[in-house]
Length: 221
Image (tube, rainbow, N blue to C red; front, side, top):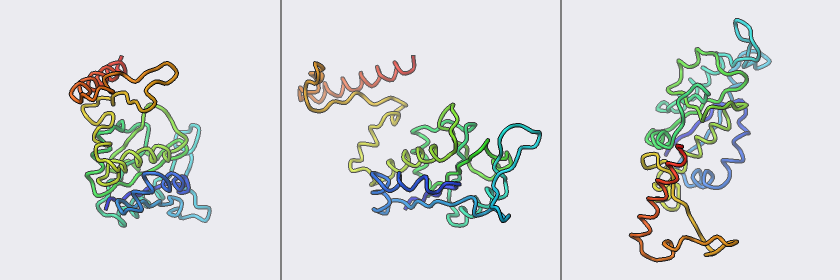
């Protein structure tokens, strides 16, 4: 069974997304476990403080190393073989290949930041730093949820059809998926390409590969 843990100040953020659709079915079927760990539980003062002002001045607050590092240690104690991932704008870009790589591990622990970010020393206690892209979120929770969703659907047995994950965009050499069509054959003057109605699977395969490459090249321009 694949284990997932999320270190966060807002565990409730994940309640609804993990209780519906594919993640819910995956958890109920026993393909994975999902545990939220409240970082604030590891604060040592009566106010459960997890942030402080940065040395050298500047706006905003930083997450203190003490509570965060202790939460990481607690996660590793629960799951000694976990792979700890910090969600941060300075991390390496998250890709489909990275999602597949994560599924090969026994499990992952995702560390969510808030405020202006982390005390830099916290980086020494994680295995990897990941970013969803060149933009800033209010916290790491939306990024963690995206990583979870991408990884969960790739776990063996989660999707009804194993081919669904194999044929996803970016799975093969970073190529996007081809265009898809369903009923009706014509919608507001726009018709389904005739080749898809031909029943000739060899020609359909050629068309799909051509369109996938065409779409991928257009995205690079």
